[in-house]
Image 1 (cartoon, helix red, strand yellow):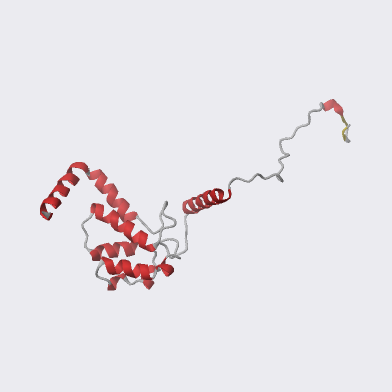
Image 2 (cartoon, helix red, strand yellow):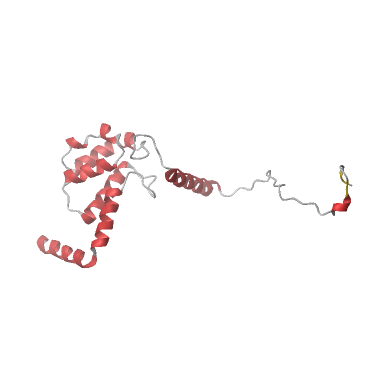
Length: 166
């Protein structure tokens, strides 16, 4: 029964999934990082599960390989907290991540250098502004005045030389 199911899945995949789609899905799976765009609030466990699901769509990797790929895509500081090289199965790896989640989720991105691209800063600022606007709604700035474009309705002849408007 399971052989027939696997055969059916393989036939469906070969019929529906084009080589281009598979390549793009594989690239997306390998490029997925912790708190990517659209996943700013994900927890470490959510990231690990999201990455594993991406991988399993296009690859048939064993637990050790999936764990190594998830660890490679996570912030480098995670490796000092959860040593993935000592873990042989997926359930244990996810359990360790869950146990250390408070420490792991403080790392914002996968780079340890502290360098953040300007695109990332723009995306984060946009998300913060949207969240702030959603929380507080729109507030008018009654105290702000724009006098830059103001023009007098009086004619030029109405002014006395050097002394302003009469």
